[in-house]
Amino acid sequence: MRDQDDGSKIIKSVLIGDGAVGKTSIRRNYLGEEFIEGHLATIGVDLATKRVLFNDEIVKFILWDLAGQPSFVSVRGHYYHGSNGIILVYSVTDRDSFDNASKWLVEAYRNMGPLPPTVIVGNKIDLRGKVPEEQLVTTEEGKEFTEYFIEKLEVPAVFRETSALTGENINDTFTELLRMMGEAEKEQPAIYRSKV
Ligand code: GDP
Ligand code: MG
Image 1 (cartoon, rainbow, N blue to C red):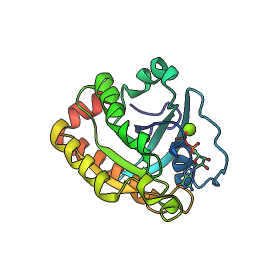
Image 2 (image 1 turned 120 degrees about the horizontal axis):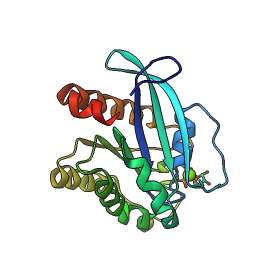
Image 3 (image 1 turned 120 degrees about the vertical axis):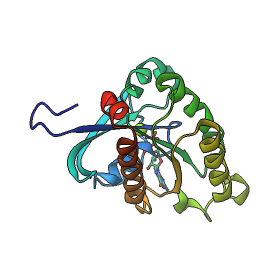
């Protein structure tokens, strides 16, 4: 698909994961916006765009920031369609959000079929050392989950741990996603193009 305004190519990704894990904060950090302390629940869906370099071409990158609340399930379904990449976020301080990560992938799979390149993100690592050890999701658990998921669903995926507060690994997360999406396009240009 091409932008009606300037004819540039459009690529899309979705941010998914439980509420309050930091999806909106990650998006804001990536776009150079300031960190917000309080949690303002995303209602339905937010959309952000950025110009990025993609396979040697400047393209318009659209990032859908979906609300995590179960009540928005019908709204979310729509936005999976046509996405070229997924960022699945959990919080390393919230074990439930990690346990729910596979449910999010199942929801994505139900809406999209074979999944596009995916980054699995364990966010809020700045809080390691500040909350009791037994509450934390370890790096090893995140890696294992990602490997399991790659094998099970045959999806190009990587694992990253981030902090939207300090900005650690945020840019790298998006660089990796764009790199994987670029590879996917080279390997299957026809399928890829029909999705954008
Ligand atoms: P969302 O519901 O997934 O979009 O989560 P938000 O981005 O709204 O963040 C939920 C809460 O967690 C807010 O109070 C944020 O300030 C906080 N938060 C998000 N990311 C981080 C992080 O990396 N570190 C810390 N310490 N807090 C974070
Ligand atoms: Mg949000």
